[in-house]
Length: 302
Image (tube, rainbow, N blue to C red; front, side, top):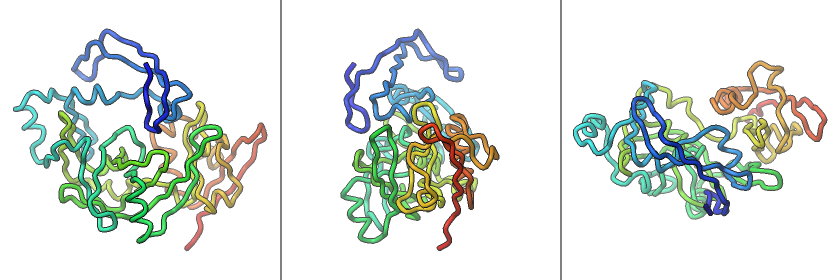
């Protein structure tokens, strides 16, 4: 089946139909899974099974992040919907058209996308407006061999959603995407319900909001999975990691001599990202062109 991905690349996916799958105590019949081939720009992001938009659209999903719980329910049951959404505010059609606001961007209409591993992605129009007020942090992002993006990050922006203030958001301009998207980092800052294309939201109260951040660490790098290996996938231009000698695509062997596990599961769980975000310095052992090297990265003081 010919398909266009998020980067507007065409690819041909293979489809697999299963009789049924079980989610909690609910059963879905006739589910179709799709493979993601290596020529798809999303290939390196999907190193674990993912539930797609079609399944999400046919179930009510309540994410109570204060208590770290998820509830699935039949959205057609109006009484149940009313019960689950008590205390939440409704944004009609908010999944595809969510209105945000900030002093720096004015009104910002975004798509709410849990498959996007960013806080908020902005298009070129918003980027041009923002850079007149704030200097972005620029970094190179390694998508795959021979293909990199140059991304601009704007930090510390307070965004309002349905009157709720969400502080310390990161707005990223990615030329190859060039659209307005609220990703899963942003979603993690609120309690929310998805039901029939509508979005219900409620302020988080557990204090975790203070530690949820997007963007490169102060050390100027990001580690992620490429071709089934953990690699250096982002480097701040003239940042500490680049100055230390690291290069995009370097394969990671060990972080701080094994102080934290540096495999794929450590990436997918977010443990490695959290460790790097909080680090004042880092010893990174990598492999480049068959040769092993160790680099020391130190956080720069302003």
